[in-house]
Image 1 (cartoon, helix red, strand yellow):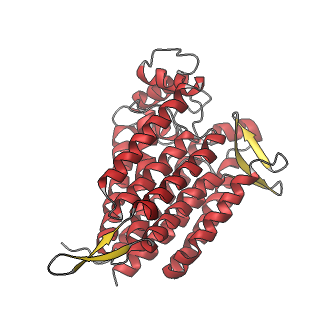
Image 2 (image 1 turned 90 degrees about the horizontal axis):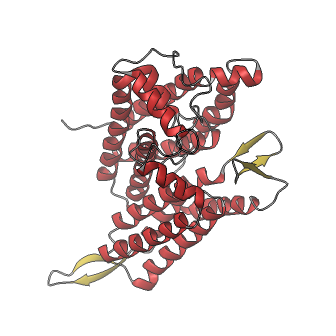
Image 3 (image 1 turned 60 degrees about the horizontal axis):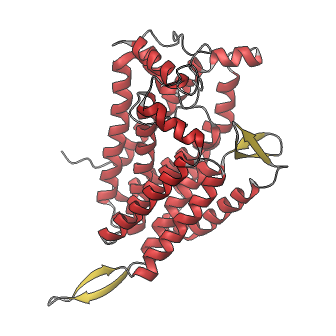
Length: 377
């Protein structure tokens, strides 16, 4: 059956994600909120005010804005984001949490994380840049016009872009986010029709670089060791994974019921942020996890259908980048909680606590809905 209105389906999925994010945060954050602020809804209200509300408004704006204009301003958006990165070097406006400087303080009202917005802005910029670098040459008897990418014109600038991004994120001690952005960028680059050997060369260099960065930082190597040997240091660096697995196992098939998690009462570290999936598994069980994973897979299918039906290269690459980023981030978060990947600190899209990632993701949804609308009319 041919689905004619992908924008309606996507809107429904995004709405479900938003409702799920608000619902789960309300129950997961209540104990920590009560202990620290004397009320059970502080974190929920904060997320609504500085996450969902501005995210929905900006997402609606991106849904209405002409895509051609969005493409034109994509370099400016990336430049502003890079300036925000530079602000992390200024102690007066930079905030430090957990040994890393990743947040900027806005007039003492709230903190925001530039790296979260870099995900969507880098997708827009790369999609626009690759389209502009697409040249054509006539080949063959039929004189067909085929895309041609030169080494100097495309490959080297792309590698320089990746190196600059890597330097920025290494300074922030955020290799997990760097990995998400790097892999997404490579997918966009490959989807643009570049030669396979470009991709293999970049992947080889990236693996070598990540290996060095992990080897020469003890805390990164410790995460790898705990991933390979979960029984290592169960009361230290392995504590979060151990408690996450206890929470997931305690949920069984049907779960303990929404709001009835015991691990969120100070046992599981970061239960509101990167450990959210473990609490969901404890409260809703295996079936609840299956529903959540199915929602991400449905989002993947709809996103790929939007890519397939778009006839504009910028829209194709942007839709692919957004879809891949959201699904990859969800996969990484869930996999780290069940021991398939090392712990990363990557938030679960739309659900984990944190205003910056919610706003960035809802902006991306507005853009994706905008592209879907153009392909289904």
